[in-house]
Image 1: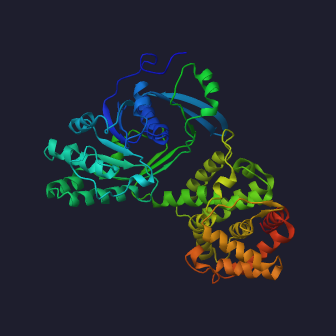
Image 2: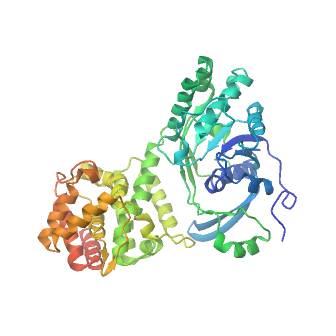
Image 3: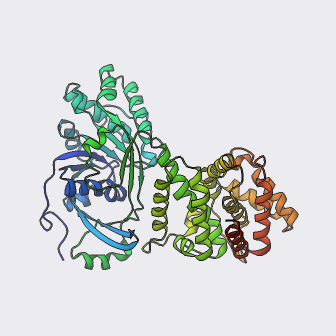
Length: 489
């Protein structure tokens, strides 16, 4: 069987317009896939030259295949379970600057380069004070970027038309602002002239971005089957879900240069990405965290099982529709559309997403993802969100560490686990003890950032739910909650 390369797979030679730091699975199945779609559907003519950010990486493997690889998408699309694959053709070459520094440095002289994209992991956007301008290359990504931009500034003599639109994809809040801040730190550390700092501001746009696509990566266990299906050998197949979303906070001129609408991509260029980040955290991540203890104590193992289950699925749907969406500051139709896409993703038949994989550090996750919904709902509605409170109660019961006679393998900070172990033992299984435990949990400022006992009725309702779960079991407790909610509506 033939190997994937440009002799086997004939493809167009694109003009290098995008400089990309990072060659991993996510960027290849997300950003590069979208660039490929824009090239093929909107005639963009954009090649991507990739820089390997670390000494070890995939430059060699990608270059052996002439930058080509297959993106294999699996999931529910428009209500239908689909598998699709495409050869991404936009990557022109991959440079390892640790081995080919001159080739990397020569990129500063390419006038057509316009965009810089990165995903060097969350740890990649950090300041390394030991980096120097004359390092070949610098150790950190921001150090490399600063030196690259400075060489660009020098070569084109400060031409404002030779700056970049810089769109980091690292999963940290306000990633573009953080990257720019560190670039300016290097500018000061290296005593670079004021003209360069002015050029950074005037000729370059650092965009914050929010990225969303599940990318499991290379399907090692299924490669024999996939190779037969494809009809060629590809050592760099990358599997991703059908859903994708890229929210870019920046000037509308980004849309003038990126033909995302013509290509039909789910890319939003906005003045403020905060509502979209909040939407993702509260709906997608919040629903994940809220369903985990409920589903697991009910006896379910995967997210798909949970959302398709008669009782647990009804709970999750109602939680999102009735309690999460009303707290968010975007149009309701837009929020409902996003929620429907989230539920499709949860039902992906090609992914076994175990709820216990979400359970890591559940206390801090509830604080970040779900507690803001609970408190905002109280502020806006003047009452408690019963389903979110029930999830909080389920979380407390989950941290007892038992599902019937089965021990739950809890994974959290040792101090959190020790605290729950001690306090669950002290309550001795009595209803009074459970109520005392609940009051102590909600009063633990180390968990929540503040004591929650002052929220009207929260301690009492949470304690009622914890006691009911302990007394009746999750199945009976949840079924009663759903039944009461239906009667109330």
